[in-house]
Structure formats: C-alpha cells, structure tokens
Image (cartoon, rainbow, N blue to C red):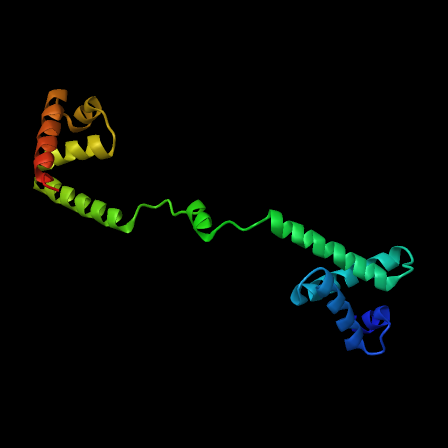
Length: 169
C-alpha cells in the first residue's frame, strides 16, 4: 500500500509520500492518529473505485475521500456524544436488592422457620399448606381429614404465635 501512496503523492520514497498525505489530512481535517486511519480508509476506497472506473487524479481522490471521512467522523462525534458515566450506570442498574436487604430477609426467614419448628406438627402442616403451597381451607381440611373450623383454628394459632415470635424485629 505504501508504494502506491508514495506514487499518489508524487514522492520517490514510500515513507515520505505517505507522511505527506497524512500531514495534509491532519493539518486540514483531523489529528495525526485519526489521519492515519482516514488515509487507510481512503486508500481502500480508492482501490475499490479504480476497479469500477478510471480515476483521473488518484491523489486528489484519496485526499477528497479522506476529507469527507473526517467530516463524517466529526459529525458523528458531535451528534453521538457519549452520555456521562453516571447516566450509563444508572441505565444499567442492578435490579437485585441490596446485599444488606437480602441478608436481613434471610435472617428473618431463619427466625420464622425456628418459630415454625416450635409449633405442633399439625399446626405447622396446616400453616405450610395454606401460606406456602397456597391451598384453600377446604382443600387442607379434605387432605388432612379435619374440619374447616379446625383448619381456621390452626391458622389462627400459627399466625398469632408467629406475630409474637417475630415481634421486635
């Protein structure tokens, strides 16, 4: 690539011709680092174009393409300004609860399970079937072979006990 660029710039040395084009682009349209990239992209477009039709002024073509690419890049930077870091972070905030809340919830759950362990087996069974499995009173009564009134009493006993058990938390 550098040999043809030198020829484009009318130089005998590959390096000098390339440097001359990069300097022109950097002076007129972009900084030196961007100028290197723009020259490379312009040269690729020159190669593609010369396959389709003859290019009368290759140097002018490359410089014109590089200038247009620089203008396009400038427009993109101007209109596509990156949002501040805080805005990006807020947009991708973690939806999980804070670790402290998770730990506190786990501790409360552990305390409730300890309380459930102190209940009678039947009361605990009724409570679990209703609160955790979502069964209705008549379903629990049928499954355990007890009356709906007994289910209500077991639930009232469990609720009252657990409210007192977790009191002060």
